[in-house]
Length: 123
Image (cartoon, rainbow, N blue to C red; front, side, top):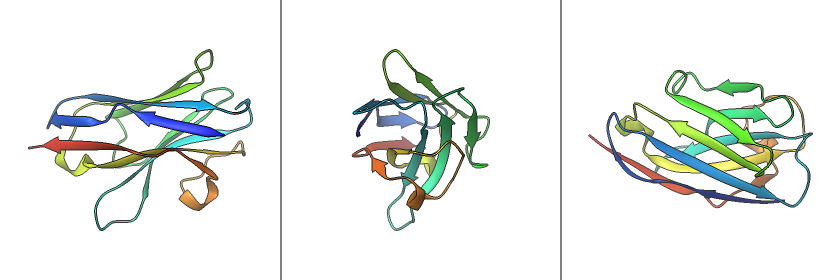
């Protein structure tokens, strides 16, 4: 399984960014896919997750209502649309995959990881 994250960059507070995660290597119908982030000096934290089959989603309380996770089956790509960005959203964002069909916010449950993409939000 290979995951390639992209779409990060610099945004102003209140702005928007869309992250993408291109997945390859196998069929993901029995996977949960997630986005995590890690700010300097902090632990990696859960942002959002989606069951590839069915499209059910979960969000961290800190981003609920501001972000939306989705996937495109035809393109084997997952997205994270982030709106109303805040400076505290600044972090490296990682996409991840786990061969389970239940939601989990724990990074240790995810076996496959993308390389990360930097998101910086200025005030």
